[in-house]
Length: 398
Image 1 (cartoon, rainbow, N blue to C red):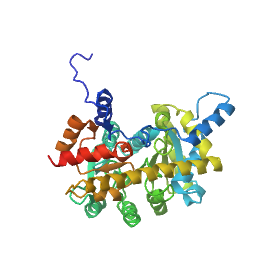
Image 2 (spheres, rainbow, N blue to C red; image 1 turned 90 degrees about the vertical axis):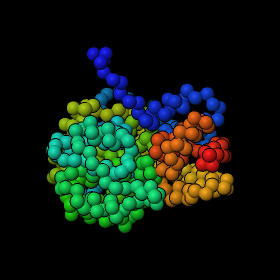
Image 3 (cartoon, rainbow, N blue to C red; image 1 turned 120 degrees about the vertical axis):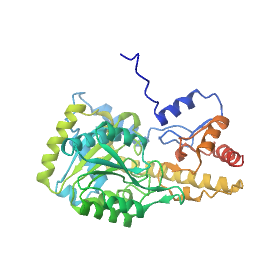
């Protein structure tokens, strides 16, 4: 069957990780893979996660199938994080949530559900966006279009151009938006800009689909949900794909959620019925363990406070590495201004390094960066920051 078939291209990021693993340079640094790294160079299991797992080990009585949409308490916990505990959306019961296999699974289920009822719509993605967004919505059968977002010249947001495009997106089309910590640029909208975009969606009639994979890595757990809150206030339909991979460190547990928000409870009940049908056809019901960990932590105030403290520590470490990188490059006499990196949010940054520099760093210094210059700030540590700054300085002075 495969004799006349050309091999599929390797995933850009995962392929880079494979090359990194094979590299024998003892000083090698991986700034490509999208996971949080401690200052010791490991991807940790949070203390609150270990505590929750001990509770589960002592209380779990069965490995029976989960409901199609997952544990209902898990869904309630997800909604409380997304909208805030006193949200009108929760009180009016106009949102429905299904536990999905990670953020990717949430995006795909949402895309499949939308395709069932909007088969002729296009999906609009930011330019640039996380590379897998293209694959997910293309696989669901959508024609892909892009709206302006990142300005390479200013290292900021093309908000005026973005808004002009969004005002002209046809009613019924889907617009995917990064709720915070834009991947790959690290450039986010401010609250005033989000308010304008939410009003634009309500007026133009397109479907907002928020990818919310990094809650807590921007400003704070509560402040990072501003986009979700503003879209909720409009009373329109919208989707949210969220994930506990990053903020709980549950990468391999695949704990995510797809939340469908409707104008009222009656429509939400209908949405739930079709969400269930979509999940049933794709994977029947979700994996249990990661969701039960999140539920256990978010249902116990002591565990939740411990989680919030650990997450804030991770966020602050990333902020400190942004500062160390900018200051380190400045102290090495680099003419190029990298101060914009301090203004970006989340784990990722468009570093401003061109393809030639990215290639030189990989081939000569074993520093692995995604094409386009996106770096994972969390891959920087106090142990490798001087080596990285020295290497970038050397590359830029070639």
